[in-house]
Image 1 (cartoon, helix red, strand yellow):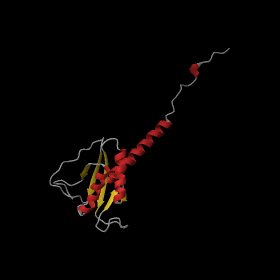
Image 2 (spheres, rainbow, N blue to C red):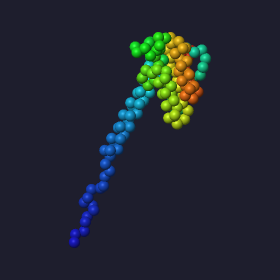
Image 3 (cartoon, rainbow, N blue to C red):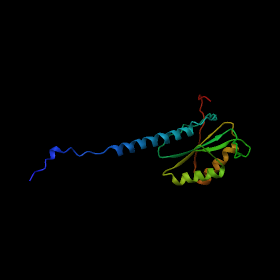
Image 4 (cartoon, helix red, strand yellow):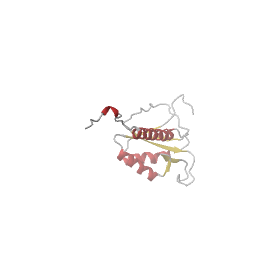
Amino acid sequence: MRIPNNRSRGSVGFNMTPMIDIVFLLIIFFLVSSHLARQETQLELDLPAAASGRRAEDDDRTRRVIVNVLAQPGSTGENNGNGGRIMVGGRVLGENELQKVIEFERRHADGPLEVRIRSDRQVPYGRVEPIMVACAKAGVWNVTFAVLGRGEGR
């Protein structure tokens, strides 16, 4: 009887192809999601100036919803003729839809929820007030405004 020789066999290897595939998918996911998050705050708005205030602290535990209020009226008439469109996540929303989005985000937030309002300086307060009312109805009390400080350009 012949005794098997284990030295002639190659070593048992580990197939790294599925691991590399998963890593590339994760990289693509994070690149796309970070691009969408940056796109939300890079929307060209002429922010109002503030004489006082404090810089917002970025907290990883706080989930943030950014509400943009644009000065130009929408083409579908969702602005009721008084200027400004409400945008969240790149979508134009009405006041009822905005409240549903805020309620949904509050329910699914692991920790506190912050609503940051970025409004053009030409938008009247009457367009910002319904956003704050929607936050209050949804139980969100951490509402901040994005403004320009002293010395920051327009």
